[in-house]
Image (cartoon, rainbow, N blue to C red; front, side):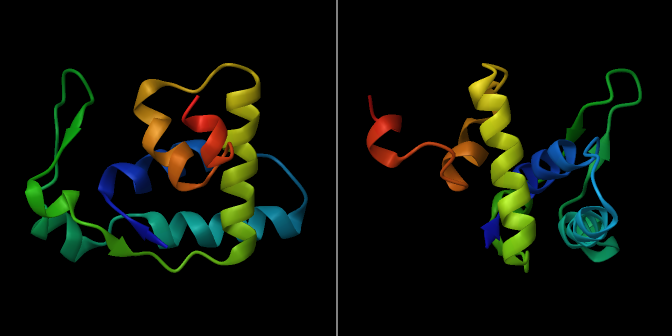
Length: 112
C-alpha cells in the first residue's frame, strides 16, 4: 500500500493503543515496525520534533508516497479501527485522508 509520512504516523497512532489476542498483537507489532520511519528516512526527510510542542515536521520528500508492505490482516485491523472512530464520530480532519485511503465508507457515501 502506498502511504506518505503523515499517513504512516497516523496509522501507528491508531494501532498503538490497540488491545487483542496474541495473534492480533503480533500482526500489530509487525505493522508498527513496517510503518515506522527507518533511520535513512529520518535523515532523508530531515525529520524534526519541536521539543516545546511535540509537533513533528519533515521536508517535501516526506510527502511522497512510498510502498509500505502491510499484510491484508494489518490493513483490515487499521480499517476496522478507523471505522470504529468514524462510527463514534471521533475521526478528526487530519485523519480524513487516511480514512479515505482505507475506504472506511463507500466512495459514494463519502461524496454525499
